[in-house]
Image (tube, rainbow, N blue to C red):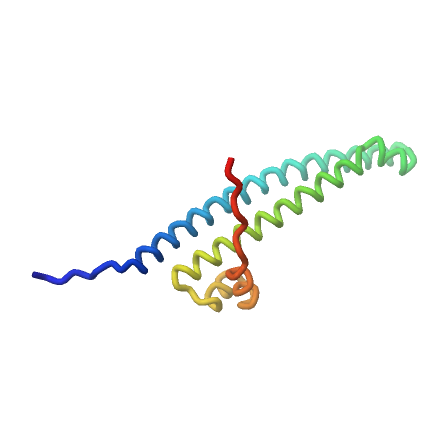
Length: 136
């Protein structure tokens, strides 16, 4: 009877872990894509605010009046918030992909070279716990 390689419990668990990490990578990349779309929309809105402010200044309006009329404070706050959101999404996506690559057998140095970051950053992010997902 020909011998066939036996799948060990460890290999199955490892394969299952890699599959879960792949799903996490795909989910976090989707989140990042969505955050980028919201950022693009916010930047377009901010462009409109800045254009309006410039036109008001060109018309000779005082700077304080221009800021209020253009809604500069609200636009700045919304833009800052969306940029923080993108940074968080990028971090989660990178962490998920670093963990996946590590589970697939890549070394920290290989991952670092592929991403153009330090080996220390990769190591730190791979060790970082993934946030628990809230059940809806």
